[in-house]
Length: 349
Image 1 (cartoon, rainbow, N blue to C red):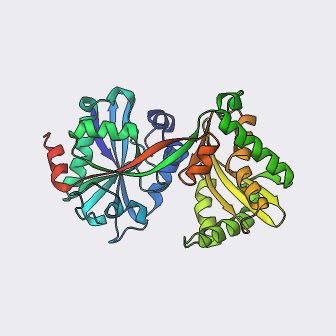
Image 2: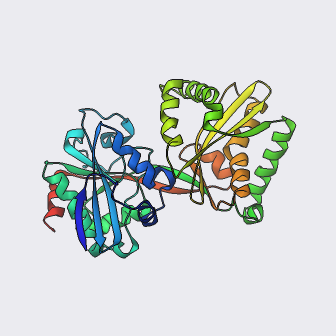
Image 3: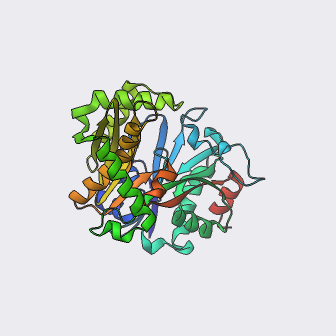
């Protein structure tokens, strides 16, 4: 096995890359990862492992060039880390491993390396890249399998914090989807359908370019009401990237009832559909609830079934209404390996 550092995915085959790890879905796929290379705020490199023509690992490494984090979600000082692991982690003191955006990351490691012996040379190369600059390693928004692999490879040196849970609907796109659900979930779904019919919710499916201006306005105003600074122009800029991502299809669901309107953006990648963002107008009312449940679950599920998809992902927020409709949750973790422990990994200790 040959392990090296490369500055770009340009020479990496997209299909081989995506076969290494599909757990992160569209947000961690080849073309989305390649897009991040264009962000001049970050120095990007990858640990690559190969065996002849076979690609065994491509682990993204990100170094932020500014003094303060652009996204506070990636500031490990704000994570609920165990007591005693509060070492200052500024952009100048650490290197991010796996991802730097979208609140999910993937290590992109072949199953042949899914043990501490096989993975250790790959991790050592990442640690060496950090240690030569006096940095530690940060592992943001990783799934449980990646956390376990890193724990085995580091001898448990990483301090971990829970950062959220991603909803996934395991039965939503099956032909017998409701039969696989509990009786309680079936009751909720029937109640949803009755409410949607009573409130005469009008629904439609669009491409982003068809509803860009209206959708951007609704999304921006929704985020502002939730206390998140936003602007329609910023929304358009964010979604222009997704609309330009070759392997991802950006779809917009709309719903209206009375004076309430809402949009859901969704990402279709391979056999997966991910509910990416939901935005609504209006105040609490039966009409607004009907629009919400339509956008939250029923429209994406219907679209996924009609297009023969297999997996419906629901994102990280609104856990209770998603659980009521059959979601299960995948824990996401953030890990910190301080500079001293990073040097120990380099030295094989």
